[in-house]
Image (tube, rainbow, N blue to C red; front, side, top):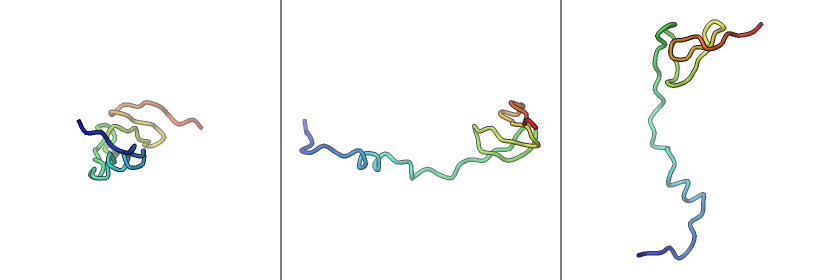
Length: 61
């Protein structure tokens, strides 16, 4: 079995494992408001925070 002669640095390992090949983030439309937003992320609309088409939180004055 082959063994490395020297320890591979953390930076070198991280470079190999990067996700630079990933495509642009997907944008979907909210079921309730019809507003575009990033998938799997809550978004604000008219002072309310929506997630999966439901109101999660309202903005305080």
